[in-house]
Length: 309
Length: 309
Image (cartoon, rainbow over all chains, first blue to last red; front, side, top):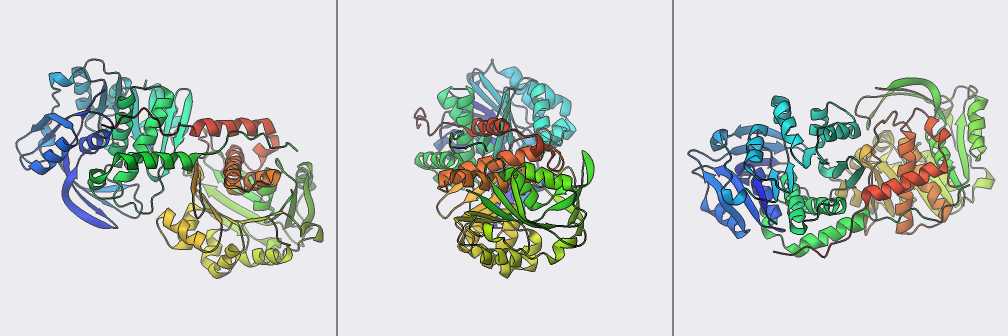
């Protein structure tokens, strides 16, 4: 089944302790689509400016990403500039130039309106709501957000959350949105807003999934070189939703596997700047790393050998 | 098989966002022994002052902890005073009164010198070395330390590490001792000091185990109320070593199970001040929580259903 994603396609300028790049391909929808494209067909809705080069278009097409929803606006492409210190869990935003994104109003092409899987990447919750109003009952809707929308439009965001199945958010944002310091309490509160599955991203500490009746804990892959965390969250979401769309299995077991595939994709993405690592990635590497996640978390069930004293 | 532990028995005064207690039972050897006592016999070597009440002695005896190695010095019992903010991963030490601990020189009773399992709790590495010199080839030696010894006696500490099988340390300390910001690199360096198994504690993010050929990731139990993290690390070590001593299985699989038992014990301990939760704990609760850890981390191996595009 195919996925529809609405988000940003952007230029990023990024500085980490290991190097810097300027005006490279980035954006939430870009990372998401490229990651998901390893598992399923992706339809992308976003806007770029007049300066967006054919090379990047060609790359996205080479990943079989359907670009009929990618419009070109007058002006420049959205540009984000950020920096990471040795704590690679936290980006410091240096500059944000919305450019053509400032007046972006997502129009979902008719051919996409029946999408089975919809991912609302991190954009203004009012735009996320506009997207929800244009699609016909997708099987699974997931959405992401960021601290900026939590503080500026909490009510609009809560209305979006009520209409999605899976809410993907990072740890600090979960605490911010719920007003609870304890993560389990925060999760309970967010589930109370009506979402069925809450996925809390914790950077190098992995992911926690909460449902009303269960918790699933997935580690991050321990890497010797984390080069650039930009796009890790969207790459996670792309692998996660891509796998769900591939199998159509949205049982709890299916969602757990999808979380591991998402974690696998994110672990590759942070190994290089921009989408460089995903560009060279082969499916067999994804399978190998899935097996590593399994090996890394394995332990036997309750042993019988323990003798109570 | 029995365990020998050398460490501190202390009074703690602790403030958390949820309350405060003064002069309650604490100390690394106390938490370790009580936790391990659910799995095996424990012999304790430590010193207390003239003010240490019979009640606490009676409690330790009620857990079948052998106290022939607990001496009473002239003066007061070691006293630690600390505070936790909402980030319960980090204690702020307000006061440390070593008292009788200042002149502590561990003497291992002859009956203990043949111990199969030895835990060197966090004390001066020179004292840890003295203990190693008094025991006859234990099967497994594990040790803990703290930032204070890493900065004040790094060379003595490295000599201890060369002689232990399992080194248990927290994340920040692993970075500090290795001088590496990246945890995988830090672990590789510490394994290079000659230790076979490195266990890195990450508070609410669980535990990572490194061996020269594998990594194991265990989550912490997500708790709605973390009341007081004091002693969590030693309670972890107690459950971990206690289970190893119970089964005698020091294969990688055995060590992984032991890590889960350690995590289970730590998860109970933080639910209340001092050792209050361990005092009321029943073995069936330990088994239930072990099952919860298994359920919380379960996902299927590489699915066959994924179709490469």
